[in-house]
Structure formats: C-alpha cells, structure tokens
Image (tube, rainbow, N blue to C red):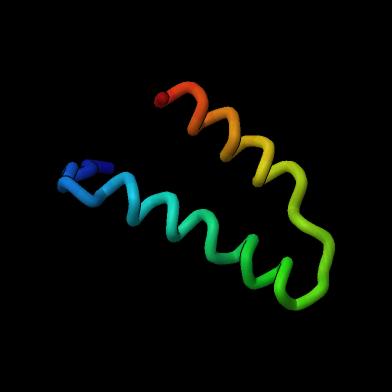
Length: 47
C-alpha cells in the first residue's frame, strides 16, 4: 500500500481517525478507549 504524502495528509489522516470518535461522543456513547489510546500514542510518537 503506497501512501502519497501531501502537505495536509497528516491532518486528513487525523480527521479520518478522529471523526468516528467525535460522532460516538456526540451521540452519547462511550468513547472507544483502545482507538483513542492508540491515536494518542501515535501522535506522541510523531511529535
């Protein structure tokens, strides 16, 4: 799987990953702990 990096590719990826979590939170459901935890680890590793 090839990934073409664009200036806003990281923002798009975060938006795609974060959107289901935001939808679930605004819908009143429990946040997906494993996904958010993995996302936090990935972001901290990048920065």
